[in-house]
Image 1: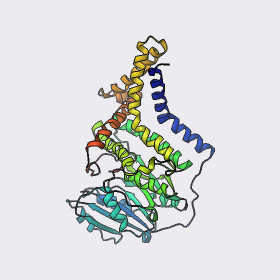
Image 2 (image 1 turned 90 degrees about the vertical axis):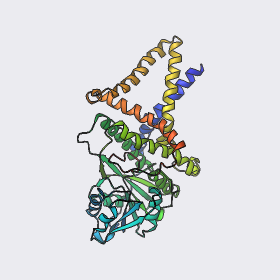
Image 3 (image 1 turned 180 degrees about the vertical axis):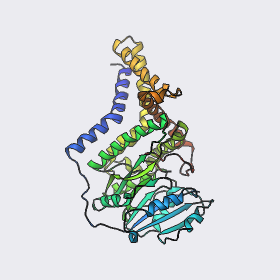
Image 4 (image 1 turned 180 degrees about the horizontal axis):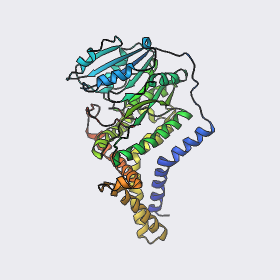
Length: 391
């Protein structure tokens, strides 16, 4: 067997396992031996909803209203808005609330979300902290559903679900939505067999006692915080009934900035928390590798598989010539998604295009991680936070 055979089959195995094998293995385990949370009645801890903002004057009122509208005992719920160096009228909007449950924590210097999360949690003595972003509207039962999972003492954190409102969604936005539904399938089954690797940054809850401060330049707080919970021996759940509503990115440029930042955060995660790569320290080592890290390897495996297939086809093998036609055709199908209007009409083109683009973003993420030391500072925009990401 030549080097090209070995490279082709190895790269193909990596891709098949990453995108199909791991989800199917999770689904099988969840069916054979599910471990859902054991909810207890009457668990009503004090809850602080923590929102970190940077210049969100236009949206913070709607967010606060959404938080105060929760069907949770009013005397056990409050909202803390933490400013990451806001220079607009956000402080004035928050101060305009007569409701004493709404408070404001100013941080004059802009340092990034992670630093503000550390400060915000330090200012809370509530038993449960609910983290959410300024942009998304919450379902009225979001807090109560998250708390219900935490009523099981085995759980230290629980993720809500990000649901895309698809009115007038673009073809690319629908492709991103399809990818997000696939991502939620994985998270739902990870939660059933153990713990999710990362939570939805737009909405998740944490036992205050399980919080450990994270480095101030952390990009993915929504992975770093729950992984520290797992390292303490607690589970991290997923509650699909606790919903944050958002809109998907409508074009490649919008999704690019979000996804590249998120994937760069995965590279950074290994740098900041090297113990995650030690199987005897990290109970979710296998899931972390399968769900997060192999996604970073996937574009390089795609390239290796394509090049090895070309070499094998050129050698005269009829089998690999047939595989090459199919292989190359799938890439052409994805590239056709850039043709205006075509992705709107052909679903397969739409999904293939989104898949290629999202893997290309993983390549760009490596460069982002290596050269951008300010990636933890986010920009205010109107696009989706997307799966497993912060603003």
